[in-house]
View 1 (cartoon, rainbow, N blue to C red):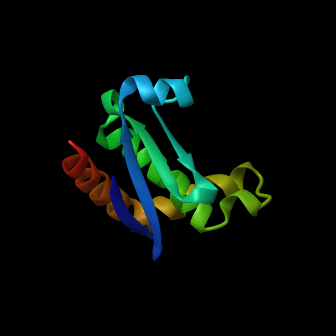
View 2 (cartoon, helix red, strand yellow):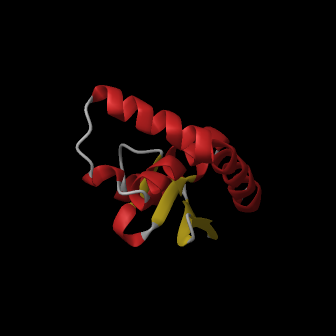
View 3 (cartoon, rainbow, N blue to C red):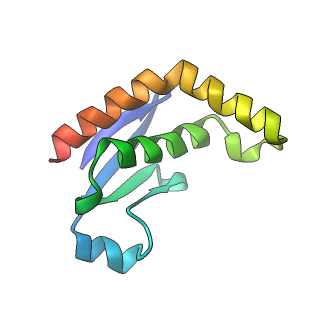
Length: 102
């Protein structure tokens, strides 16, 4: 398990065997459990793309994205701004997580 900060909130990234992960999350390579601030990753899916994807869900949660009622244009702008502000940190954290869990 690795702990990181997402906007000053502590998140845990848990690496699970493929078999254990598939029993609990059969259709997912990884999943962010937002209320628990945990990301579960299938061992065979441990890569920068998968981790970055799940970290974006963590940022969405911490920035209250799911509570907003945005139209398509506003959603597009929201994600562009997210990447502009935090994209570099997300990729940096994803690389570090992959190294630490490998």
